[in-house]
Length: 244
Image 1 (cartoon, rainbow, N blue to C red):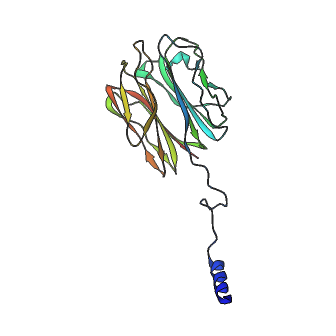
Image 2: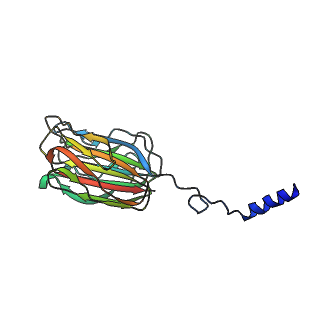
Image 3: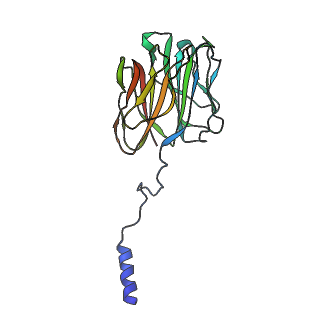
């Protein structure tokens, strides 16, 4: 028995030490993932000032927040949220159909504060009753916005976004903003994206059409998304990649 115990002890001594998955002695970071989300849509003539999203329950910390303002350019004041986060505008201002009266603006807040009853509002200084659409999305455990793509393809049946590149697991968030003078439409993404919010069945008095989709990816790579829409129209497209 003594010989057996000695052999076991020698084998244990020769075994490689256990390491954590990160190899740093620290537990691995929590995985980035989609969090709470909502979409405010006010139709033409029935808007309010300010435009305030429905409340959602975000994490107390560690999340990235995205909010867009699509509508009258004069109603594009910076966002204000109920947890007093600092917002940074992304990309360039894009005018719908080349008309400078309407635009889409994007904002992000990294390492955001959050909690229950979280809302975002936009002051509507030019046209309080005017149409506006405001997607508000949380990405949990997102330490950085790894990449972002913005483009505006001409009208077509299939519209393809720009590409984003990730260095590891990521949450991808895609937005479609149609520019057609239509009230009933479809917009369906490919490449494994799932729609989470949409405003595609507009009232007769008009609104700002919008769809939001996401995809979870497990590995580094370069990704895009194509939207198949009917009737044919152009669309302002965004694709954002968040990592932990």
